[in-house]
Image 1 (cartoon, one colour):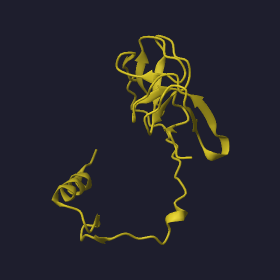
Image 2 (cartoon, rainbow, N blue to C red):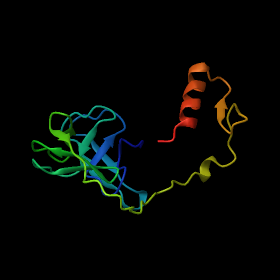
Image 3 (cartoon, rainbow, N blue to C red):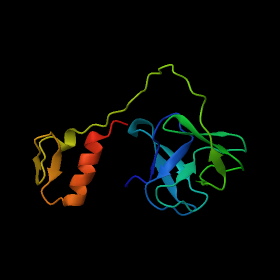
Length: 146
């Protein structure tokens, strides 16, 4: 079964919809060693977020393990997160460095595979059929220091 939702960080209390979800849909999420399920309670457009837990007004929204918003009205588990029911919020700034955990997926299934492309002198890899727009994107991301 293809993934329908994505848990970006174990500290998150929202999931990302990878496909449009209708109310009543049951989706699995989490690492393969400890899969969990959630029943969607409202229609969720693709790429939108849904509540992993019941949220009440004033609860913080965590995405990527960071505070990204605060609820302004109750959101049921499986309900849609939108600009109508949350507002922007962040944690207080701190110059203190905190360790970040990164789960690197197993890519061994693609070892030895290739594609129709070539290596540029600057180290970028480009598909052979890429047009000038994509080369512009590659150049922009290669120089981004974000």
